[in-house]
Image (tube, rainbow, N blue to C red; front, side):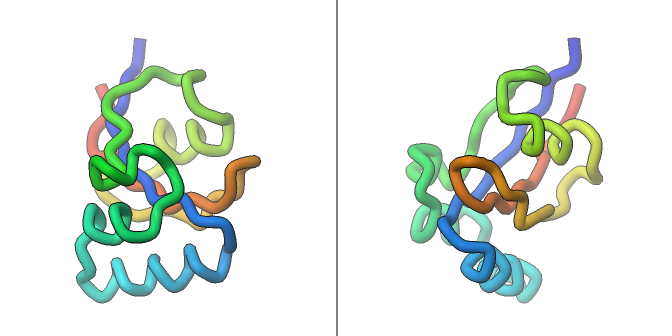
Length: 92
């Protein structure tokens, strides 16, 4: 079965997610921004979600992690939790 490792930043508004994405594009450190801004418990680990299989996350999240380009920040992706910036580290 496929597996992937990803990290994310979860915020309440699309606008905040877009501001953070611009900072990342300008060279800001993903882990530092996640620790400072993410509202997910994974923030303590720089947004690292570890390795997981398809179906463990929400569909919109899985669509990015298992279908979009690796090592690229995608989003904002809206879920019931808020807006995510997602970076897939690897897939197997």
